[in-house]
Every structure is written in C-alpha cells, then in structure tokens.
Length: 83
View 1: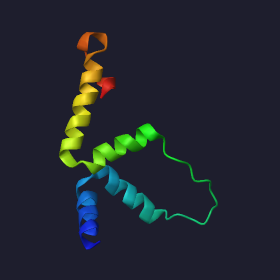
View 2 (view 1 turned 45 degrees about the vertical axis):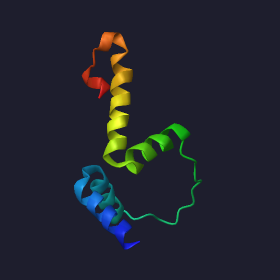
View 3 (view 1 turned 180 degrees about the vertical axis):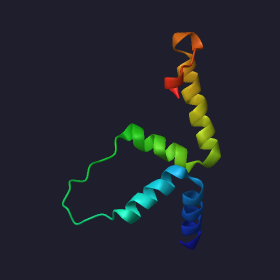
View 4 (view 1 turned 180 degrees about the horizontal axis):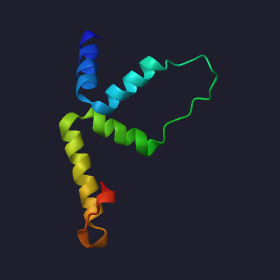
C-alpha cells in the first residue's frame, strides 16, 4: 500500500489536471448530501483502464489508435478540433 501512495503522490505532482482536482476537493470537500451513484459507461471505463493501467505503452497504443481513426476520415486531414 505505501508503494501505491507514492505512485499516486508522484502522479499528482506531475499531472496538472489531477493536481487541480485535488486542490478543488481540498477547498470544497464532499458533503453528506445524498446522491445516486451511477455506473461509468463501458467505453469510458475501458479507455481509462487503457490510459491509466498500462503506463506509457498503453497511452502510446491509444494515441496511435486515435490517430489512425482520425486520419481515415476526411482524407487524413486533422483539424485543431480533432485534438
């Protein structure tokens, strides 16, 4: 478990998005307001597992798959909005 905490701390230090989310949660902690828990859609869960669970190789494979999909549309021209 300590190794997992070290990995999380290192990720929070390096990832601007997650660091910002942590700051938001520190400033606005969760309340006891009742809510209905929803299930994450399968395609988003699989993407998250691929990006987060496989390290750099998973991110490279995902990036290549996205690039290949985008370049097969409109004759291979990528636009700024595609990113």
